[in-house]
Length: 131
Image 1: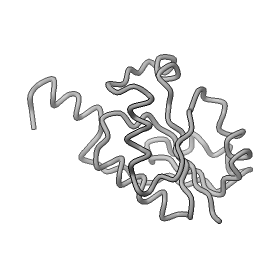
Image 2 (image 1 turned 135 degrees about the horizontal axis):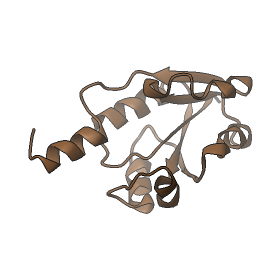
Image 3 (image 1 turned 180 degrees about the vertical axis):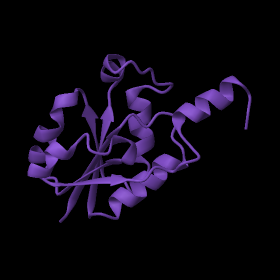
Image 4 (image 1 turned 90 degrees about the vertical axis):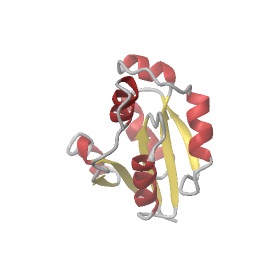
């Protein structure tokens, strides 16, 4: 079985997230999503609209996602790859090159983002009541 992992906050879930998860799942048989905890988001300077538990519930309902684990710090990735026997590490291409150090442990794939949508855009559009 080929195991894939991706990381993210996945707040205000949208079709760009779904596209990423679908394409990540196509790279293997089992997809793990490491979901940023609320505490880790604070360290990153982010504040999610939905709590970790709410975001986890949403991700678990998506047919492409097999397992959701907490992302609690920047340094856990090597340990996750080893512990979960990961074959493919996937991130959006806005992170291109940032996780190449994982190539010693697994394949690293940067997928193109869905260009016209992002959580930041949704928040901005709502703030200015724009569609």
